[in-house]
Image (cartoon, rainbow over all chains, first blue to last red; front, side, top):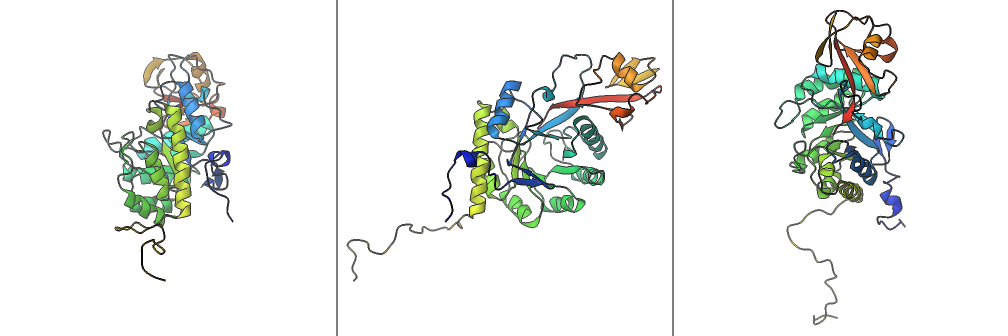
Length: 276
Length: 67
């Protein structure tokens, strides 16, 4: 008989028996958190803690040479507790993204990279042609490539064929908080690829994250939904619980939806009915 | 010689990359920084041996907040 499932300390510690596996590594949390747009560094630290994230994203930018007192995000993140996932945010070409990834590897000593090649400033949607090119080169260079991509099956299949460690389709545009706009696409991608699918971008609140996990996502990467909340650390905790709940629901296997009611109480033995 | 460092034009007589970084007041011992010249990453161990040439475009980066 299996143990009753409830949110105990064990569960809250992050489904220890069901880690997120990426490129042969196991992570105890399926929530990946960004480090940007928090009101202050202390709130960021509290949110990473409350979210229980193992992997946190950072960007790669010019060192501020004029102001050497300017702090780096590295001053606040305990690298023995959090694995850094550098991104190539802001890159518009494969060439820029590849150089940014190489600089990130040199600066941070990690082969993980979230590849982001943007095609349009207003929507921040990926440029698929440049993304595929960048990922192809980065896989060849030995990176663990995690591409931010469209919720498009063909793109995801191509990224898988190139040797990416996961695909990270968007739920909706970055920072929009619109949640999952096309659950059917994500469901199809999950069914058709064998590498992990991490939902990246567009999550607005906890139910969006739960839904992503119920659709079969292997993880959720988010930033603004937590950093921009009135109480970021509380929202981070909400995300953690939602992701764990969603994951458990996916594993448990939901009932099919039906148009008409099905009584849950027995229909036999009702008082006032005829019969033996 | 004329160099471009993080998008800023400057004049320097430093012969090597390491000397330039020090001249600019950059703590070259700090972790978490990386350098590229003309879109080629120069690994830390080569900073001292990398001679600078007129017109070099140098980028020094670090990790910042990101999503």
